[in-house]
Image (cartoon, rainbow, N blue to C red; front, side, top):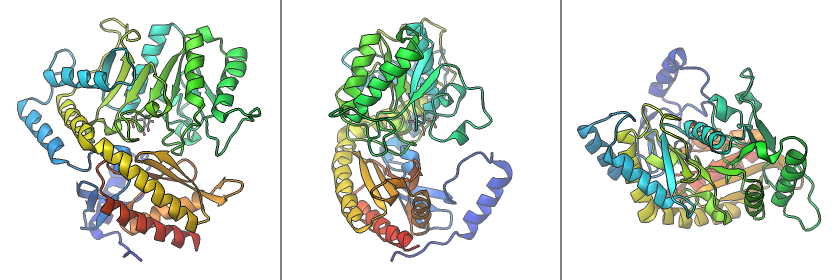
Length: 438
Ligand SMILES: Cc1ncc(COP(=O)(O)O)c(C=O)c1O
């Protein structure tokens, strides 16, 4: 068994100081206090080494402090750190051109840069209302789109996120996510579960609650992240795109977690063979420097000067980091996500055979979820076991994060090596066994 790591004196002291001054609202997973990191390895302030299978919630896409990203930030910092969105600079334009190149639609793209994922979602909500004149939206149960008042109206993964913050922004109707492992709706004979969801939207929501003319957009994560790393059924997105086309509704995909090469393609929506109208990106886009993007078809981005803006949009450090990140992803890391993703899926499926508590292994590329169940027949979630595995991981040198009710997410840096994966997977295998024995 791997050696247990104890919370050291320096970490203990820092956590105590943090508790005095930092907002208590942050949902800390466990007491990991970072000192430094390199690639997929991180070290705490007491000198303990950990393998990072969480990458700062799928953000450190190129690993921690990749030299090419560090160099780009350093060089930019020496030139200028800020100029504001009232003016222009080259990296901003170049990054926007690059995002246009990789946008998952044939039409040219317009790009609005933000400072976070939630701000990219806010921008998409505003653009959708502006462009269509509609006010209503469809969102999905289990979704996470952020915590500001617009995105929070869509977030529906835990009621805690909304508790005591009502009223929400008006105009979001939630429907079930196409999760056929735990379906909420009945299907007709031969019908894909995702198609049943789209039929429900058409018949029950558009038919009874919100006429299509009033619906600005449908906002969805192509693979649900915080909600449990859930992959939609194959029939879902083609049916949803068709519905949007028939009713002139914008298809807005939130790729904040699933985008930027994490699933082995630039965007997770590309696995499903449809083109969205608007994409929200953030997290892995700049290897950890705060940056987001709202990327829309140019025909949709028709708002005039002054309709939307922000002080830090196109921040020079973030743009430099993003250009270096994209270069790395393009030149090897996305391919590594394909290969190491498949390798991890295969290994986890083998681990699943030894552990009755693992109900499902699912995902694409290096966005993989392991779902723990009390019973493989009923799929009843086992949140307690998941929590134990997460905590045991920390104690044995493996940073893991949960998602959904009972899932552990595997979202390591996209350049993780096979050796590092083997080491972490072996620890995981042992810890699941330990947790199963109570
Ligand atoms: C799919 C998705 N959208 C939006 C967000 C919000 O991003 P941020 O925390 O940068 O505001 C997140 C964050 O976890 C996310 O996973």
